[in-house]
Length: 338
Image (cartoon, rainbow, N blue to C red; front, side, top):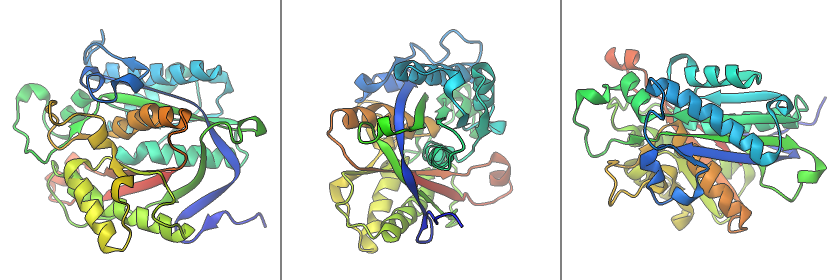
């Protein structure tokens, strides 16, 4: 029997160093004007970038982000064994079109805002298990495409409540690889905690933060419990994407459970925008939110040795227009990696 790699109830420990050998991210114009503007590889001038539709823009953005990550790592599509990718659209259409153009074997994923953490964890499992030397973890989202699918086209001019979130237009890609050369030189994925789908009965499609907070808090508690970690083990515990409402709720739930992370607990939805001057309501959301923060800002802090250990906790509302219109609640799916 091979050695068991599962620790506790929900966590996997990797036996070999799975390194982040490359990373890249791209954003739209609003994100490019935010506080993290210096950490993005590509900032598009407008929401269409010369394409005929928002959907075509998103798939181009995802493809170009993967190509940028490959170029920075001096690798090619032919070096990649698998691409694990997803987006917010039906049939993960952005990921499929991007993979068609890139020619990399695709394993499509849907976890909403948790997809960046999920693709990273599963990509690391493939490398650790010896199923490939390199994998790509990539996601994308676009404000225009997501609003058209889940709520109303932006031309409709519908009013949004102040606790709603603004879908990030952006894409992120991580290249994961194995080899002695990478050990100790680059950030590496050490553990992967798979969260439970949690549904506390929230039905408001605008209030994603309240729906996601319990799932994010539960996964953080399980990760710390499975590995018997102290609250100060990580330099940063980064959720994505709870924004203002969900971040406060998650912090309260963790404190009630006896895990006080204080300033170590931050959220991608609060980092990517400046709420004091940008009209983004409670903050950012979408697949691209945690992706552009993690693949850009956080990777830069790793490079500068300002961070050593980071826990990325992706939580996504599994919002379906069909089930919402049928009166169903919104379950949430969290994942955690690094």
